[in-house]
Length: 307
Image (tube, rainbow, N blue to C red):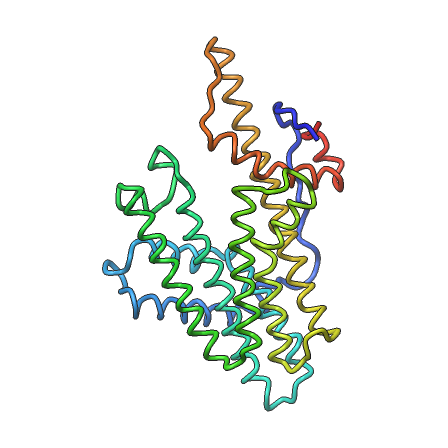
């Protein structure tokens, strides 16, 4: 299973969006309400405007202004709309309120883990690493702030979970958070090597499990029993969408990293210099190499990059 680093002449073609309604438009009103709710919580607890905590202010701005970042709660809300159709009319509004909370929990948990993950970015250059390092001009102070900011969001998710008054939902979402931590450790320190199975397992843990759990909880709150056909289908939808997203993203990142390494090699050779790489330049592409191998098994265009 060798990878030859050479110039990637193949460009990724993810295709055009399928025909049909825009999923973001279907829940546009709910997403606006969700964003306002999260912003109000952050402003109330951490200050607004110039008083806002700089790291959380940056994270919230990213969430509020970029539609592509909101796909996780969008999936939960869309599933909730589908499940609400089978409920009595007088119970649908209350159910969708609970689904809104689940969507908020999923997004907040994801954002918190992204902030926490920046602590692992131990770059020598402040410009390349944790955004909090830039804000505080110190990796030590930046890491402390990242941990505290992520903890605040996790605390908020815990409060939201308790508001649903459903111990089963709490257990499922807590398990999703545990899976994310295991997946992140597997990404940075893979225990079983760069195999396709290990890669998919890591993807499911660090990305897919959270969305799958949110979708499963939406089915349970609608009154479906664990293990029922509807509950299993809801969980499967979240798992597959999450996995597809992460594989696509990893493939694009891997292509970009290998192209960057190849350009550096060519530049050094042209100048007659010795090629030197720091640890991160090598580790980042290799951590994601399995997704390229996996994709090559299903897409002939990607095989041009893998040898």
